[in-house]
Image 1 (tube, rainbow, N blue to C red):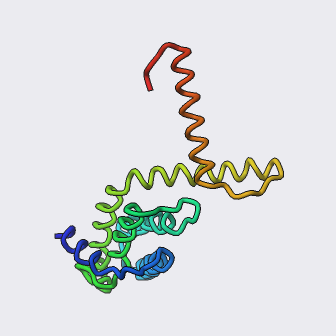
Image 2 (image 1 turned 30 degrees about the horizontal axis):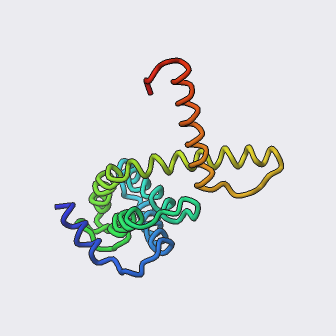
Length: 167
């Protein structure tokens, strides 16, 4: 039932919905949940995880495109829409359907979120490293990918030297 409802809502997303607007709408809903006062902590914790997806679609350096972007936007649109299975204004339970959908959604986006978290960690560390050396240029996704490629090559050479093919 949840999947069918999500599909119906996603189908209603305007074709010209941009990521910045959508992320803003999701953040408004998050603020409503935080201010509601009657939202149980376990529900609020799950709903707040949507912020990762909102950050991901707004991040210019991560730059999701094509199907990846469309999938994340479609998932976030369900949460941005005021019409849900359980109206948000219902005390205690109003955000329960949202929390359940967050759990289902985050499972679908596990690979994207894991990669994005790694990129964000790399970006922070690299910016700090560059700042220590008096450099202030932006850390890009290309920088992260180059670092990942170098790491894989290093691991490959180490395995070859040790005679091991274990990952």
